[in-house]
Amino acid sequence: MSSPKKITLRINGVNETLEAPAHRTLLEALRDLGHVEVKCGCEKGDCGACAVSIDGVAVDSCLTLAWMVEGREITTVSGLGDIENPHPLQKSFSDLGAIQCGYCTPGMIMASKSVIDRNPNPTDDDIRVGLSGNLCRCTGYTKIFEAVQDAASVMRGEGDKQ
Amino acid sequence: MPVEYELDIPQSLDEALNALASDNGSSVTPLAGGTNLIIDIRSRRERPARVVGLDYVSELRAIDCTSERVTIGSRTTVTDLLDSAEIAKAAPSLVDAARVFAGHMVRNAATVGGNIACGSPAADLVPPLMSLDAEVTLSSKSGSRTVALADYFTGYKQDVRNADELITQVAWDRLPEHSVNTFRKLGRRKGDAITVTGVALTVVVEDGVCQRARIALGSVGPTVFRARQAEALLEGKVLSNELFDAAARKAASESSPIDDVRASAEYRLHTIETLTRRLLTQAWARLA
Ligand SMILES: Cc1cc2nc3c(=O)[nH]c(=O)nc-3n(C[C@H](O)[C@H](O)[C@H](O)COP(=O)(O)OP(=O)(O)OC[C@H]3O[C@@H](n4cnc5c(N)ncnc54)[C@H](O)[C@@H]3O)c2cc1C
Ligand code: FES
Ligand code: FES
Image (cartoon, rainbow over all chains, first blue to last red; front, top):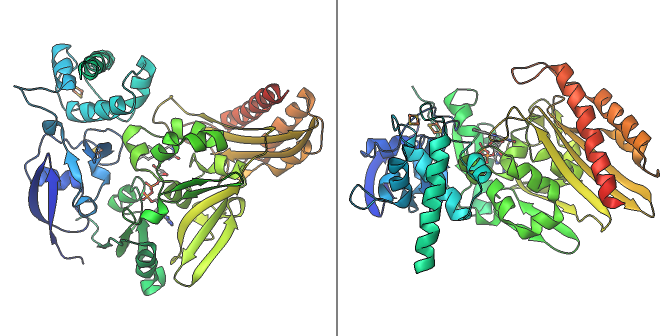
């Protein structure tokens, strides 16, 4: 039997504290703390709905233990932007119809961001392979791939202006 | 009810080995990327009493290439391999495998040590490492030993590792100039698919003669293994298409695949022969 421990997670720039046993996944901890923008699909690394970034690298939060990421920078889709001030990926996804039920979207966007961060000028094939760990049951993917290309070009443009 | 366990988070290799030494390691399990272990615990295939998380054992996350030898720490991720210009030069087969490994998030978490330790015949980094003659270093509180990766697995998901030992690194001597090292994986689709058949190949040629041939096969036996009879057909010979045909047939005959949800045994035998012949032909064209 393991006893719960008080841990502090840094989520979207804010420290939050919770009591969690060792086996608590980051996905469960985030949702317990009210970050229900992080979705639970399969809990086995297949669907990508639970993707968040840890120190800028996207991982499946269902395969990550909460205790292991104390002190790291955790970002969920809400940390990228909001309705008033959306991230280019959030804007392109909603403008281009890449969202239907929206369940896959938070994970899709976190994975897309990680893919673009690594490769700002991805080919269509790079995006397909990059998002192969994210499942969407609604859109048929085509609009998602278009939205990622669109956002990537916006993000490259922003880079040029700096 | 979820499976409950204690979790140690060592900050150094010594601390990690001490944690594994408690109880002679019998109920202690190392945790690297968690892309197998967390799932296996949730499904109750694994029921550890104590888990030792390796995220902060920074000694284990390193790639070191000298002119003679390549050393990769066990906590190195698949993405780390893709990001290394040195690995791209020294181990093309490993990059071939890393590129088609799982999806983006799993690649960011999954480690070299976890891929070896999981013991799966479908573990994609193992055929490339075996084709490079990689050696595995196992360390415990009482010392370290080195085992050839080709001798590491003893049966389906069984290996020579003692419970209190950690895989700390894999290492091998760099290939000479006139060599080719490649890997091809056949899956049901291009991204995030478990291997149906996988072939890794190393060919070293000097003065037109094959000095070394390594053919390591994935997903066509209880473990990843070397097709040693096929290799023997090639070594010491002047390579030719006839030899490639014979070696490819031999590689298939050394395989013992099973039928499963991904493919039939018959299909696996057919594709092992085809992939082996194709890789040999392509290697030869590049060396000529
Ligand atoms: C969606 C999905 C897709 C996948 N696709 C692929 C694929 O395409 N190709 C492929 O090969 N695999 C694939 N896998 C399997 C898995 O990602 C790999 O085997 C991975 O390399 C495991 O590494 P890990 O660090 O996550 O290991 P963990 O899950 O942390 O550990 C796995 C096992 O190894 C042991 N272990 C870990 N590190 C050490 C060490 N240093 N010393 C001793 N024992 C250790 C653990 O105790 C455990 O038993 C996939 C998994 C998922 C969930
Ligand atoms: S819920 Fe984590 S990958 Fe599906
Ligand atoms: S929009 Fe419904 S699952 Fe992707």
